[in-house]
Amino acid sequence: MTAPVREKVGIAACRVARAPLRLIAPGLGSCLGIVLYDPAVKVGGLAHSLLPAPPAGMAEERTGKFVDGAILGMVAEMTALGADRQRMWARIAGGAHMFASLPGSAEDRVGARNVRQARQTLESLRIPLQGEDVGGDFGRTLEFDLATGQVRVRTVCGPQSDYLI
Image: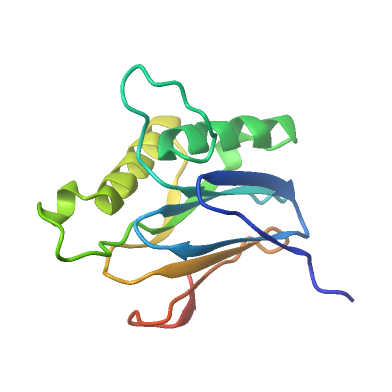
């Protein structure tokens, strides 16, 4: 049996697909990796979002750039592929505080705001957040296996180096 194809999801992008693909978001610092999955049909998505939401009055230029738009866009794409929002679950990783020298409180920095926005958007859609690995001061790489639903996080200098969320 051959290994599933691995596809990179770059910064400010998202990808929705069916199994057996593996989606990878490398280099998550303050960016947030957002996984949505419907295990019944093995359809899922991964976003590598840069910011929480667009400024008021600004049209969204890339579906994955903003956390709220990425989640809404992935839900719409997944539904078009036969997924049911009532079966979907989510996991998130990233949202780190990468630069301690920046002024302001940790709660006001982009990583924490990304995490808050994801939780709020998922809650408003009634999509359960089943796992997360957020915050800290280290980067992560997230790998999502559409065949199994496993979400793996790898770090270089965090408290663990390779684990499932």
